Length: 426
Image 1: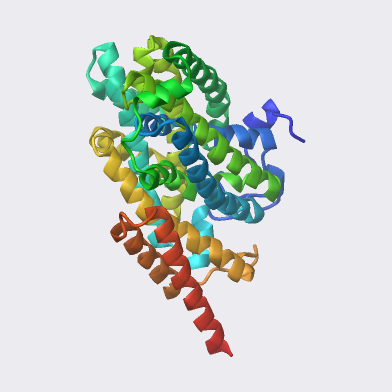
Image 2 (image 1 turned 60 degrees about the vertical axis):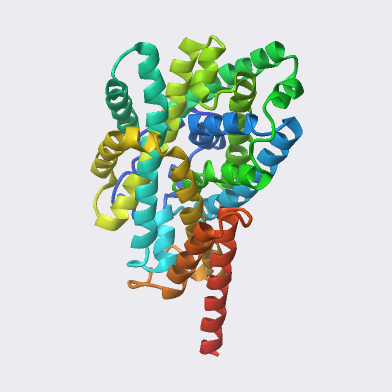
């Protein structure tokens, strides 16, 4: 059924089987079928994840760099690439019920999975800090207080909701998503009326960004979070539902964030969505909506951190979420000042991991069966493939899209390794 189901959202996750799960977040086992979530629950969860103020900021940059047709084409092509990548990961997560880290155990081996888990932990803590800083600094300026007050209070609240797992993520998302849509639509409408139409607004500030860089920014805006998609779609009741909520979130939801940021950004000439909304006279809505918007993204990021650290340490993820939140909070102001460099880094290192995982799932389906134990050591081929993809994504700048470069090279190296292994077996 597609009903929202308040009881479905708020009910505690407790096992009805005789053997309870190792932990409430299923960090070491598949999510049982009777603990999967409804389609609407998952839709709110995934939309809340992609409804992010940093995507609005990228949208404002794109609005200042393209005319209207160019902007729409960039977000369409970038969104298709991003949703295709995340959609495949969403399918695998919902089909198996495994988190990203459990999937990596099968693709890279138990010890080999420490590499992607470490990368995910570092990038998600960093993303938490970036998004928190983007909200905290302008908020402190408006309130005329030290930004550390906003950082500490905001980081504490976001960490607290993540600590309560998926049910906490769904509740916060269900509150935030409608508010973001309402205020975003109002912002776009106000900008359109004031600027004499969207085409006129975009024509004021066009030509500052190349087409390929624009697509790269769209993909990089959420390729980090997108790689962690299985952590959430493993709660989907059907694989089709997992794919649909993922595509809706990354193609439609994320594109909405670009549009909300771009219209006001092109009108005001500002790149930071917070200042765009303030310039439109939306001070109170900006504080409240962007605050909840930041919240829904950051608690998802910390949730993934907890699962990654659980794989590395073999401990319950809940206390590890608290540690991750503390680190991300303390580093947030520094990460905010290095936002663009962080996006470039993410676009190079995350896609090869997800791409190798996708290929390995379809090449070695038996490894992903519930009763199959993962290899204890390291599968060298997938690790080398990821390394090659990272090198390609990092050093082939200016030659296509860095994320796609990394995916293509890692895919080629992985498939060569898989073919050679098959030939050796005869």
